[in-house]
Length: 381
Length: 123
Image (cartoon, rainbow over all chains, first blue to last red; front, side, top):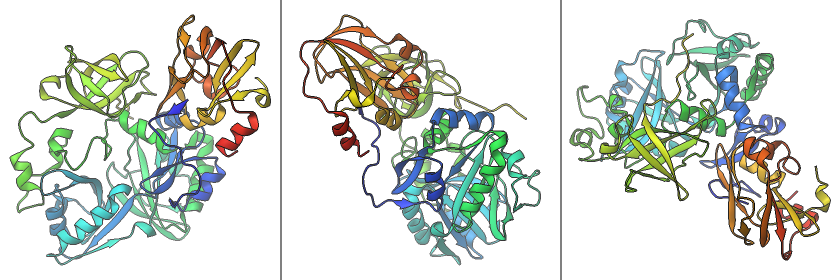
């Protein structure tokens, strides 16, 4: 048997370790290389971890992600120029999903930006793009009165996701957060854990309610253990990157390197709303975005199939004649829904909801129909 | 569950329980662990001829796809329908209820011993 889509980590490697590595070893994690980091791919069962997040709660170590602080009186203007969105309009405490565009209109990274003060923003970047984002921000903000600090090495990140996240987090001993119950989706608030400053955000990447906790690396292990001990009775489990990927796929959330990249325009990925063409002034990528990606550019769609056989990244999508009309970017047998789901870029003519297509699954044609994203939406509380 | 120390192994992380001219074939716990939760198993049909080293089936997890290679030349005499219906058996009992196929083989190729396989996977 060979595993042809995933290379297990073996032997000695130069990968970076999370400040929570000891906790992962103690919990029996299997590791995978992720952007140069050794991160937990699963602890025991990725399906069990997935279901725990949908029905109770899961806890993820995201310490590999990049945190880049932009500080200074002109930081709001600088970020309006650097990013596709109007970040100057973000209130203190609020968070916003945004895109760092290239001059040609492609996507250098997708980020969440938190405004933590009148003149202070934290840009949370994908681990694989941390250096590129930091370098671009230094360059793009140079004309403005502000400074850029890559604080990634000084910030650990723990996410708690799932319907029981609030119930658990509100009971963790040592955490002091004023107004946690009132904290709205995509807002953050400062807090404390055992005397350490933390930032608590109601954000996530799973399609469930949840929180992300930014904490000093020294305090992260104690916080991890405190959440684990508090949540175990409510069904909280540590969850790895395998379940994180199936959770975000069900929730229709793009993953950089799969749905997003340097040759992707936001509008192709269904993220046209993230690019604010109405804001005053220039921003990097504006001219290219206004020109558009060109006629016939493929667009991102959801696909659902019957049976159990999933399409995977890079598998072709065919029409009824067998002509290739697209390519899959992410796919899995949905653990929650029980049928195969995929995201794919397809020709506009093949992108209407309900269009019957085929996934070429290693030579076998599997019927799949275009369906609306997201595949899964949580029930309102 | 078969006694792992008496089984034969391949470098493709499959095990064989050889009884006379019948080999029962499955994947090792190491392989199952690396795949993650198995959600789909595709096996050859009974009576099909298989050739050593050729792909005869697929084992999919949520995250990846593994190919099942025929470890011997021969004819499939039995497939494990239980594992097709409940692929999680590959994870829960890879050396027992998670067996995959039985092959009536003509000749046994060179295979790894328990110790040799453990050395291969570094355990």
